[in-house]
Length: 121
Image (cartoon, rainbow, N blue to C red; front, side, top):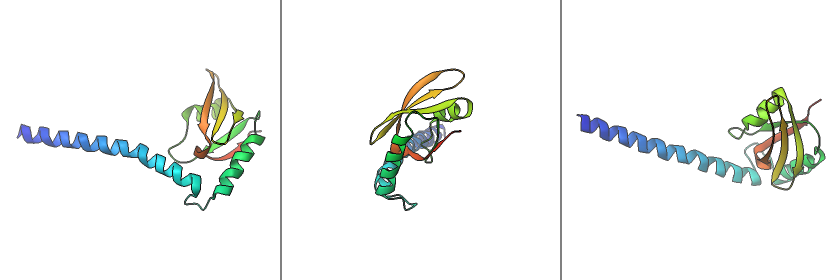
C-alpha cells in the first residue's frame, strides 16, 4: 500500500511540474496574440499608438495599468508610496525610474505588458 501511495504522489508531483511550466508558455502566447490583436479588439495600430504616447510621458510621474498576470510589484509599491517616472523607451521596452521610501531603482518593462498609462497629479 505504501508503494502505491508513493507512486501516486510522484505522479502528482510530475503533473504539478508540467502544469507549472505551461503557465509561462501561455503567458508568452498571450503576449504574441496581443502584439497582433487581442480579445478586446485592440489592433496593432492602437498598440502602436500606446508606444507613441509613452514617448510623450518621458520625465513625468505616471500610473501604469498592466494586463492580468503581468503586474510588477515594485511598480505597484512605488505608485502607492512614491513615484514612477518614465526615463526612456523604445518600440518594445520602457525604462522606468521607481522611488519609494525604502529604495530607488530603474526597471525595464515590456510595452506589451502595459494596458494603459496615465499622469499622476
